[in-house]
Image 1: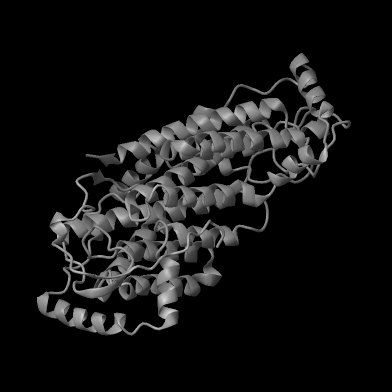
Image 2 (image 1 turned 90 degrees about the vertical axis):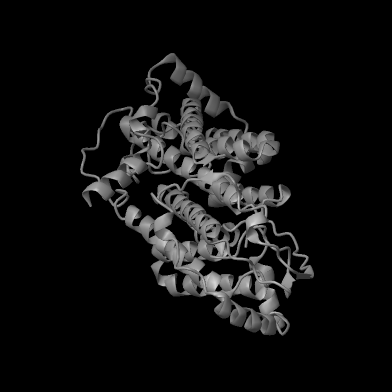
Length: 461
């Protein structure tokens, strides 16, 4: 059982960057058969990641036949008179997984500054909350089994699931609340966008207004559980230890994220379980070899470009999540909301747990950077202000590659090459030793395998 579940049990007992496919808005006149017989009210059982029970998030009973008839009448009148702006809103929100647009938004805000454990934390909170909102809404759908609107103009293919509550509205409610928590100055804007996402489901003809109202409320309620968790995940802890000194220790007055290794993990029991063996001694033969390797690299323009490209924050997050969005499109998972959301959540959580384990190891050893140890080591840019061993780029990139390959094996070769190039780029840049990369790779693989095993346990036939 991961730490997060132990924490939940304790609390309960004691207290636009992704590739976009042009939307072909097929207009159809549909009569939906009973949702009890529709593929999509899956026989699989999906467990949530954080919330303990889905039943407690079920909305009230949907409107009766009389109220539904009135809703349908109003819906028919609206869908035949949509403005160009309203149609554009449908086309904006319809493509991709339920995570798609919301991940674009957080990535846009994470485009400035370097990668950090806080950014990985935000990605995990957002994607896991969306997944849990979808699990809870799926449970409610199967419980209420409300038919979707019938004999009405629709934009796009009707989802193969029942109507109440709207799953995409639930995802929007959860995402907007999480983003409002992460970026409080924009909370009102995210709430407005959630309303637009919900309206798109109505204007597409796929949901009644009462479906989206219930979905938004469900998602917001799920998000509040996540926000309460985030308030106690120890990410606001301050360093109170004593910085070690010595010829093998990180130099410079500034050091960042020294307590990240103490943050609450999502799946792994303890980051201490993933602390690698000590780095090579600075006077060892291995260290001489590793320093010589860094100094021998011929930094031609293409080689130096590798160092610079992988130094950008967009390669730390954007490239990977853009590829997830593309894989969802390629595998036609746009309407398999639970499967695509589980992929997003697993990838984000494995990355966060890997980063926590990585920084725990970094501040276990406080290893000196190569150019601090040997002044002849060339660097492309200043040393990041945290210890060298293990390499965070390797921990992070390997976590992406392993989890991505699990869900989208056709991409395995490409993503593992990207992870290898990312780790090697730090040696090219002169800011890491080969041993940093190796240890980081091992952490990323080991942590991700545990997260994947846990994610698999959430789904059963």
